Length: 254
Image (cartoon, rainbow, N blue to C red; front, top):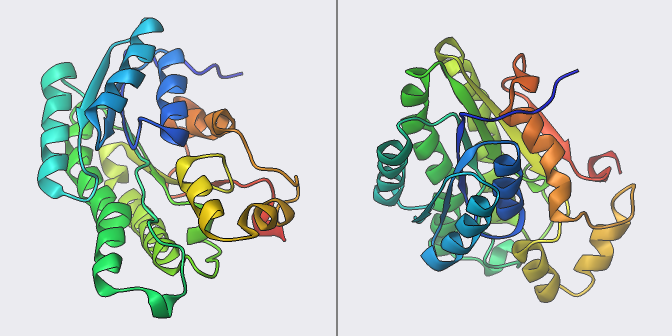
């Protein structure tokens, strides 16, 4: 039986200061990894970094915008300057600022959502993969959401950009397999997070509908994502690439 041991590994998590990202950061640290925590606000990254250090691991908090390429370049350079390597990259940052009908949305909003949810993850992964290969390879996890697989009404831009990242994940896996870099998608369903709670606040009945459309009839706690993350990040998934792991309480079945 495998046991997850990430000692000696360095992980980078975008959107790592809250919600699912924070749970991922702390889970990776508990498994032995040193972690780079990236999000737009440095103070929130520093707060999570303190939690990582309390677990006995090294942490690098870094303020980065997931939709700005120069910011992602700086993030990657800071990672290598501090740790000299990167083994696990989790493109977790995402945005869904407006929950509304397509006819109410604007081109500027589409560009904003696309840059964070699709363009940024492609850019960071494509710059990281060749460098990961120099140290024997690694694992890239693109967080796409079940909304990218079963697009819901009123979340068209979010679903479209996550669907695009799902497609890119498969291309990344095909192109980088020879370098020893595995790339998989993780599709969470309804987890308690800032984004989920924001949608629930904007749409009457969203919470109730989310619960009703899962087999388990509940919203998951953030820590429940860790089994999926540990599998994809570690050697437990050494023969898994180009795949999509769904953690949705049975949403896609209904």
